[in-house]
Image (tube, one colour):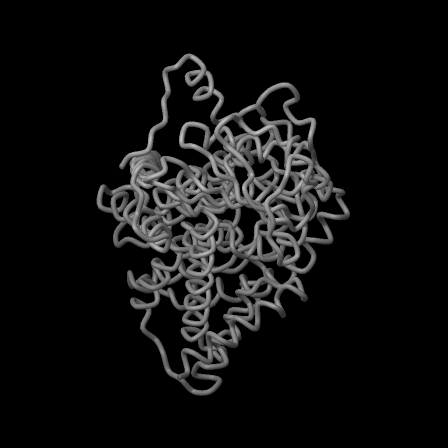
Length: 508
């Protein structure tokens, strides 16, 4: 009963979050605190269980983030994001740890743990604030990739600093991080590609099985990476990234299913973390948390961003936004349980400092982030909205049924069906408009809000989707006198297809 009420209240709180500009994590943490020892009176202090559930929730959140990330946006941002997630993390850890030691009086081991814990940005926190502020693709790509990548090195650092005995020499620690990242990346890429190939070539008996299979593949990637002594978090993110961009059958339904699981994971994790906090014990740690957070926000994060992006010629406006967009959410609080489980002295103080830091600076940064984006003129509202295309395989007919949604802002508005110039073997068979459906003719003009049913034979399925997306972005003149150009990541495959080296077939 209590769990269902908490879930319903948490769902309703999303609307409050979207209107106020506050990340939903604050509301969920507040719910946990209200239920806890200083609120209703529920006593909960099982740190080990919290860590296990937190890790499981992070796997789901990273999988959902990878499935929703567009490869054409993240690809140009990969070099900058990789540097931010490694060198930038090192800079942030060093500066923040020094502040915790010299300004807050924390011992060096505990200071290093604090510096590592708070150096991981949180994708859920960032994009819950920015969902209504469209940004240029390069900025979105950097933020998404950094949030997906930097969990891995940060977890390795926190575990290393929390281990009993002396900390490894810096070069040994760097070698360990590099090895775990390589193993995790290899596991994620291999399992992601194998899973995408299997789902594209095996028609499952029910559409509802595709989302379950995709999430199972993502979790398998995490398990494989962890068992191989690599980074499971990097593995699950990369596997989900591949699956999300593989044009799998029922892709929108899969993303919707993953988004629902992501919300449940966030709600459960944040409420549980709120339960673990004892508010009356936070008093002595408020000032140290404010001091460390101020250095992190105003010195460590900007310094790591400016140094990491220096080789890429990033404009100062984008550097400023990236600096302020380093929101800390669930990840640091979950990571703060690692030293508690490991029995590190003063680990409860570390947890309290991290908790206060995340709450206070999310309250400061969250509502001001959209304003800063607009003030720096980094909004990108003129970009055409992408089409929503869902594919269902027709195994016996050796074809595919594409369901196409024409959103507001799409340049497909005003285009006649004949002007789509779909490949031979594809046709628009039905249009649903204002609740009524009809069979279109060549002169039928498409409108915002239309739902199209397009039937395509198996060999031209990908070309049909490319053409539809091109018209959605460029209008009737897109790719004039020819098929729309393939996106950058599939250019090589397109060249091979022209040479007759690639032939798509449906696996029965």
